[in-house]
Image 1 (cartoon, rainbow, N blue to C red):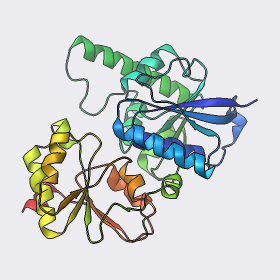
Image 2 (image 1 turned 180 degrees about the vertical axis):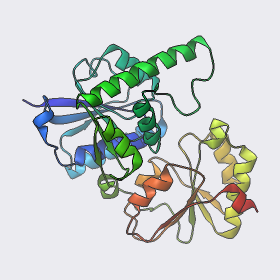
Image 3 (image 1 turned 45 degrees about the vertical axis):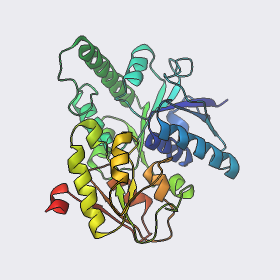
Image 4 (image 1 turned 45 degrees about the horizontal axis):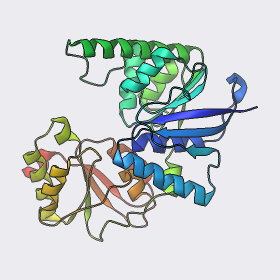
Amino acid sequence: MGGTQHAWVESPLQFLGVLEHAALPPRDLSASSMPIQSIVVHPRAGDAQLESTAAALHHDLERSGWLPHVEVSLERRVIPAGRFVEGGSWILGDPFSGQVQARLARAVPGELVLVDDGAITRHLADLLVAGKPLLRPGAGRARSPFTRLRRSLAEGASRVLRHAATQGRLEVTTYLAPDDPAVQQLRSIGARVRSHRFDVTRAHGRAARAVSEGAIVVLGTAAVADGTATAAEHLDWVAAIARRQPVAYAPHRREPAWMLRALSRLARVTLLSAPVPIELALAATSRPLTVVSRPSTALETLELVLRGSGSTIEFVPTSEVLA
């Protein structure tokens, strides 16, 4: 008999990663004790774009009949412990998540698949090879009791993943190319790594229907919310681009409402609705697009999603536009 694999996702890109994983050809099961017959995706509740992405793709998959072995569960605030059980088969999108690390401290999966949450996969590879705690860049510097707890969980998660890799129980599905240094690092510790090319995303893409002809697509950013850029700096950056060409602004899912209101008041800037991630919104376009962004994982993912469309994807530094 086959088993059920449970996936916990906390972002829209992680959700896409699970579907891309589900669409890959079955791997050699000789090393597996649990052939998988179905995948149940559990999206974390509380993120509006993740919830709308899950609903939209659930509808698409039901209508198309593609990936019939994938089921989308109701959103949950916390990881369902009754599904992510000791010895089970798990798919995780964010091994840096506090919820994920707390679950790994209580139950160790028999088999574990990690899917991308963007370029942080490279940071993950660095930490696993070095045997360091799984902390996000810049995290863990404070000395509060909460930070000490998070560090302890991060150390435990690193041990669990490294041990799973040495035993052949860790698989990583990624958009990174097979010759990417991070892929080689993961393989060096025993992880199986498979690459996808966003085939599912393109098949269900919205084809940039919301982008007006002649508009340049400017990607939103979490930099203001994270405090790594000021609101004034970002507004000036977008306004400078709009003076050259009309802008279709694709909000980042973590941009605050007040920031979006300020952006909407800029001349020649139109805000796109953001019910799905930008990869899904632009995929399957039949016309070339120009996409510009501050530093973002989307600079990499869109290169794959838009390949063959004649589109250009550019990193445009603030200093270059405002010069």
